Image 1 (spheres, rainbow, N blue to C red):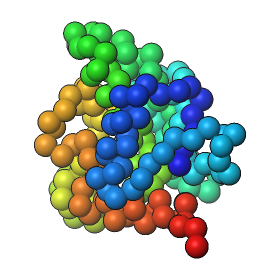
Image 2: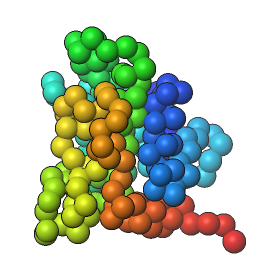
Image 3: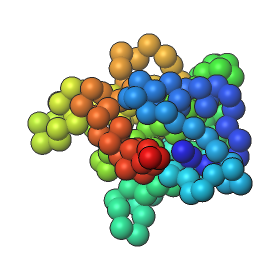
Length: 169
């Protein structure tokens, strides 16, 4: 589960859920009042440096922390500059957020394929490729797997999520 500082649009939530569902993870947003402890946190009202649409800062103990930052204003401006409509902007917010959550769940940086030294990059970078958080690829669909976790990344994401929110017995 995740919580947020600003209610994401329905399309953003749909994009995030769809990408996680493809990795066999049931992602849900929950208000802090209706849940015990959220596993991940999203700051959609972040103000980031120009050209940076999303970021996952380190935590005290991990290279990538459980609180992501997404600059919705900058994503909206980029979409407008590209002449795209609201649907593309809402979709891009979802792709950027999932990409940033991926840093935390995989505990890895960008994945530029092929990278034999990084097992999760052997099948291509998937959503962890550079550009989904700082370029224009997040605005478009049909990107040939660039907006989903790869088959190598999916079990790692699933395992990380199941450790964050173990099934109740």
